[in-house]
Length: 160
Ligand SMILES: [Zn+2]
Image (cartoon, rainbow, N blue to C red; front, side):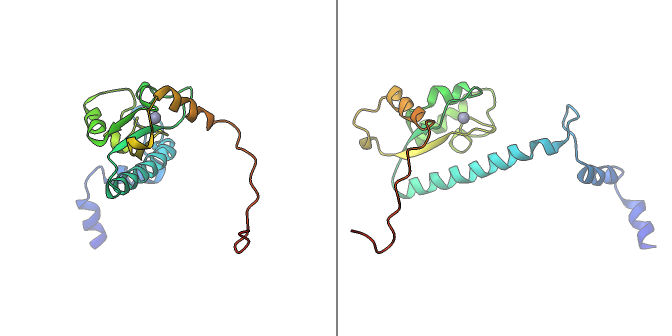
């Protein structure tokens, strides 16, 4: 009797939704939503890291951020144009009024948007004598070079 009542009162789309959850829903192009798993994992992880970084920067009294990361073939114009530049938190917040391809959320926590690999690195302008975005971009490009040979570790207690 209880089973019959439950079947009789369920919304008509309920079975369809359960089947979709089991078999995989599709996007507007009919592709399974599972293809977005990596994207959601990347964006949620980066969003948490960026939020933590912003909170720690605030506690440290740092209000300036330099846009860091590398340039690859698919780098968005927003990311390319801002790499190596320094902004205040308020200036970055106003960038939310801009629009660009791939934008997903406010740039303070999402940077360039979906699948963005870039980062707002907290800093104090006094740490740089004369910030030069070109010089900073060149230094960031150096990061793509093979790592320098490892320096042998000095064991604990061996501090001669
Ligand atoms: Zn980016």
